Image 1 (cartoon, rainbow, N blue to C red):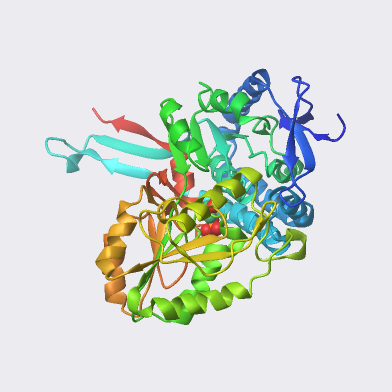
Image 2: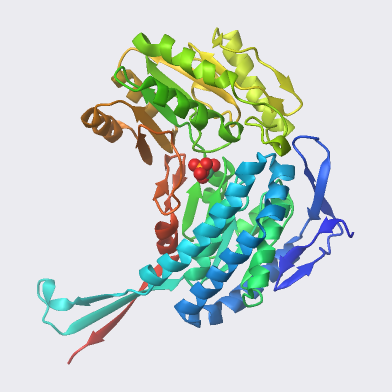
Length: 478
Ligand code: G3H
């Protein structure tokens, strides 16, 4: 039992009554790296009940005190950067330097959120009645933002720490309590992060972390009547959750098929370096990764050549060595990526590199001359495999973007800002980047997807607002 990481409930570290555990497989060695508790439904009930109780007094805790505690967590997180980052390397094969960045970014996010909460929540609204027809000035309406109650946070494997705190910090500053269900790959990093909250001294039960199998506690958590808000980042599961969840606010960030449109007048060196960074960092396992390049035919050969020169320079190997391309998260994921590659091969895509795979490690691959009858033109590989579609006009590029069921981000490379704005307006995406690869950050920017890419908007300010409800008090004069 000793080597199974405990879960965190009501301010204590506990062993599950289930007597079962879940292995966390190291993507590089493909062997069990850690084990976490397989919590059962009774334990989930207990965690939600303690969150319900703790939230009542937390909501009455002065805002500046809530902010003070969050600042404390941020400092503690930064003191524990190394052990948390080490877990990310072992659990999700994130290159060591990126793992460190993830933890530092998380500390910064928590601090910023504490500050933003003070401003956003410290301000109410005041309305008078005589502005609406038929009313005298006899009603005075005071509004403020109140917490929702218990927030359920479900982050994905690719940012188990950063996308956890991007949900936890807004929930807490707004006066909610929080239950975290981390992804299995990344669960130990999340438990270490939770330990930082524990050390900061939050009230018992206010924040908890249950680990276990989605098949056993997933639906139970998301359909639980004690949950008042769900913030989820991940894949298709989010669509299933949104269909089953009760009448609670949902914040969903799901997949993307972020397109990169390259126009004739663009700076091709800038475009090529952004395509490689956007398409291959963390081996393409980012919802905001560049997932399809749409390039005007007349410049396609030059662009492809420049991209290939940069791909040649990418290092491939274990995350401990800080390689650019590291093993993808699971064997299942590697098999899926391979299926997209094979489908493209069979249908005649041009392979710029030889396809190579060892275990979960897939070498970076650019697929040129991809056509819309290939699965990879539409599906999200979540791996280091990038399709290039040659197009004849901007209109064709926009048509391709908008035909996708996803609508997370997109990017345009051109020196003509007027044209870029018009194209951005025409693209059905939550965010369009001009002359840079898609990205979620800086973390206070709004972040949202259209269509199957999500519900609601994130970013620090939007998340704080989403995790509150407006409450009015009306003073009526005789
Ligand atoms: O995977 C989804 C993340 O929200 C993307 O974040 O753009 O900072 O990599 P990022």
